[in-house]
Length: 174
Length: 149
Image: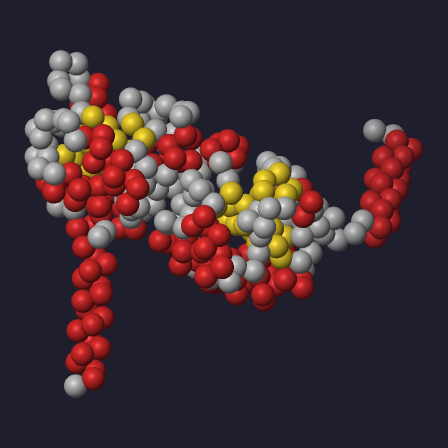
């Protein structure tokens, strides 16, 4: 290889390295913090206990904890007061918990929500929605969604509050 | 004295709650999922009457083919429906109850359903043991499943 060719290769490499360093300064750290491999949560519009419609995608920009539960499910019932605490704790920082009841009728859900002072919206789910979420064939199941509406965590069965706390806090600071 | 009374009251409540749970169903009246699958595949053998005693939303997503939805046996309406369905059957009829809404230790439906059939004199009743739920212990195992009403 001639000396001129060697110089050309070395010069190109140095130029490429400098270009990389310069561009790197303009790339915002954390711009890849929402991994695109996380699946988008299936959107839905369902009726809340107060009769108003709730559309999941309208909560983009918030961290959403989607809790599939039922009034007859003992572990679900035990989780609800802890979700009420979480909603209080992180409400101002952008957490929105949404309860999806898999009860067969609305009456027991309404009574339960009042009794337990549920401070987040509750909608009545159905089999179609369950299938869209991969089959809700055992309760409780909770999905944690980031601000882009992507499912970052799925918890099957009762989960300790500090586990949710540890997962929610870093998402809120993004 | 007060402490003794409170202790007895708590123990009484704990025992009362435990008696309504699936965990108090004796092993002799339980049937494992694999065993039920084999039994359903065997031809010539008496096919049991399969009754789902959980939520309709769960049944509509997935259930054992040929099984009947009765309603949650934790409610009086569900129990009445169950009694009505089996009233005319022979007391030796082979019946399998199942739910799978929640982990076995928390299922509110199978124990009341089993109790109701025992009280009616049925002698050949089994309860499908699902440790976690119907999804994990039946559907994900690849066992026969049907959807819909």
